[in-house]
Length: 111
Image (cartoon, rainbow, N blue to C red; front, side, top):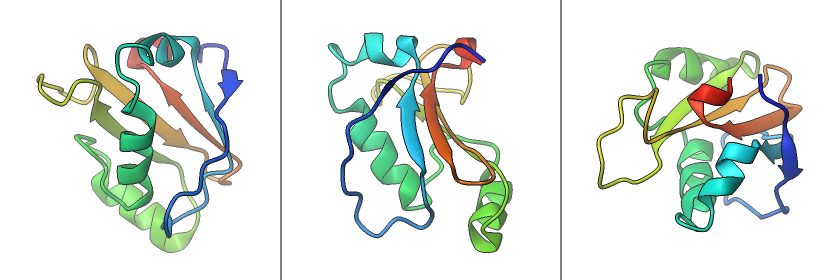
């Protein structure tokens, strides 16, 4: 995985389904913020409500939330007006570790 940089500022998320732990982003995500300033808030809000975006891990994510254990991974379009396959171009991944200690926002190529 690419080096993690820049802790995100704490922000209250309304009634999350699970704990995020420490929220961090990679340099590639940080570089997107000038062009997509609402990216993080939009994606984290969906993520903590159980909207997994275009992720193929929906059932695994739901099970991880229900059990309180297991990694959670979701994929969102960076630009919602453009196609997103859940990997590759125009994709943001959010991964929460199984122990809920850290949630990382990263680009697939930074994994």
